[in-house]
Amino acid sequence: MYDKIRELLDTVESSASDLIIKDYAPILYFGDIMNSRIATVGLNPSDKEYYDSLGQSYNRFFNKESLQINSWMNISNEKIDQIKNSFDFYFNHRPYKNWFNRLEDLLVDGQFSYYFPYNNIVHLDIIPVATKDKWGRLSLSEQDFLIDQFGNYLEYLITESYIEVCILNGQGVVDNFQKVFGQLIDKKYVEQWNIKTKNKIVKGKSYRTILKTKDKKILVLGFNHNIQSSFGVSKEIIASIRSWLQKEINEFL
Image 1 (cartoon, rainbow, N blue to C red):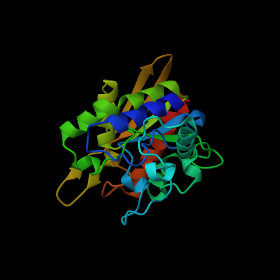
Image 2: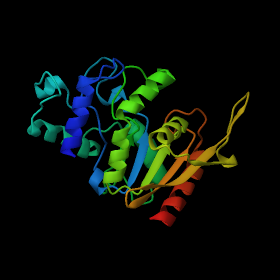
Image 3: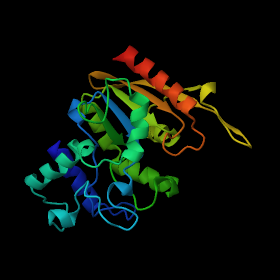
Image 4: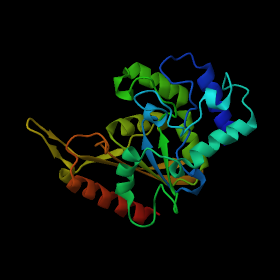
């Protein structure tokens, strides 16, 4: 993992893209990845992981200033170890609970949790770098450029860890996961997940496939509603998604 972190740091430093945040360390994963069989998957790290609206650091992750370096290249092994620890122990040190607790709520069954004492869910992103603008504000060509440059890290993490289940949070994650792995995910409409507004109905969709990689099979589950931000995701919809996820996971593991 140390070599992969170093490779990612070098890639960020040498990238010609002005779309990404380079002063803070990219976040390869959130949580104890080698203890986790389940991974939730998002688009990319939020800048809110690094600093608040006033630009004050949350001290969750290291930046060049805090490590007293001018470049991510040629960083010492000792400082890479500090960066790795910030990934491994993320949920023990001021995690962004307003975001992660919504996903945690989908898996509360007494066996799996991001948090102590379980620490057996890890969070991954389609790309492990934060962007200066929100992902949704980037053009498709900009998004595809970043996926081409950084999407291989997601594939590496899923392949080389003990992860057996991936949960894709929202349509954008589903779409881009398919790009990374070059595999379509089976879709079904779920009426119980429909969101009714004054002018239309946003149909609920579930996604499921088995991803075969190296010598293991990965259960991939997804839903089109973004749990954190989709307007109108009711408690009833959350409960239905939770029930579906837990049934699928229990039958697979």
